[in-house]
Length: 479
Image 1 (tube, rainbow, N blue to C red):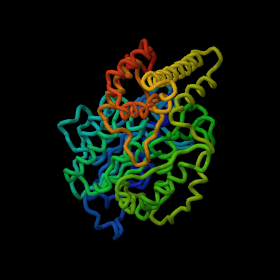
Image 2 (cartoon, rainbow, N blue to C red):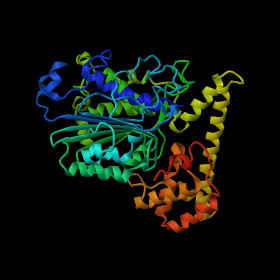
Image 3 (cartoon, helix red, strand yellow):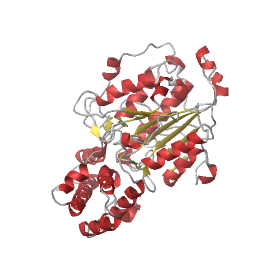
Image 4 (cartoon, rainbow, N blue to C red):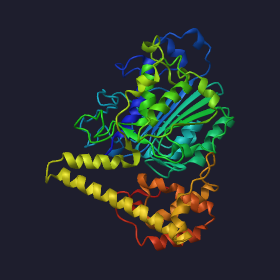
């Protein structure tokens, strides 16, 4: 399994923890309410007048060891709500049981990390309820929600797999862009915050906000990629620097590692969201043959605010001068891994390292073959459906069509959900990999194809549902 998603999430939580407690050696100290802040650091004059409470929602979707980079712990505080599947630290594949690291030379970022919602509790409805402050709609977990008011500031970090217009969840249906933006509008209409900052790590993550997030509701969002490209994993096997030799997985995601490591070295009282955005953007694209375009959406004027307003600060950095961009870029790895190939990197590295003829080598070989078979099935099925609907020549071209920048992915989001469900009913789950085809399903809807016709084409394209680990026979449907 690929640990990267999980490790990355723990990094985020630990970064915020360290920023406020001022020490990575104090895992028992967490973000406190503003009234308690004086116990941990002196508030300079320009921060004394900050009103309201800081809130944070940290969500690591994905499950499975190959998604190590998406899951990273939580902060024990009434103002921080943590969602994590939490199947990594004790996973039999973890070479350091009970320990999670986020960089090749990093220490444990899991010890002492509290969790509000884990396992089956990590689904879209709970996330929406927590963000809206709706305790009655929460199922399971700690019951904590963002019970914020009009003077408060909210920070949301979300990491998972993604596809055009959708984000993955380890349990239940995908989180769709239309639903998320409606929830954000509802939170604004209720007077639930003064400002909200949203950091999003996922493939095609720009599609979650593009053409959908208003500019006048005091929300500033940045995404790991634009609406048309994958995001990237880092600290992966075969890279420099690589993870420790006993690890067969990526340890982080390029965008998230960039903003967290930037937060580690800067004075967050003086660094603005915009300054961090620029540095992270440069590091994530890296000027090389890999990387993604970090984007910003919503009320870009909010990016003039200091990071301190959302992340707190590490007193040890209060006298640190702003670090030149080139200094941070020097720390970028020499290569990176496309998010959608991180599982294959894990399976292959596991196969390569296992003794010849061992059960571990046989298992890794089976995982590689199953993953490749699943990918071919999904790709071929979507392509065939396109040809059945639009013709052999026009089908592939229409499925890949991209709308002009600034336009939402699809006109009818209910149609998109129905189309995905119809496909999975006949062809099986899209899974993390298959989310890349969400644009194809959106284009089918934009072309006005009725669901009855989609149903017939799907039934013709797929005679049966493959019984593989990603099958909807086992994991249910995505929509």
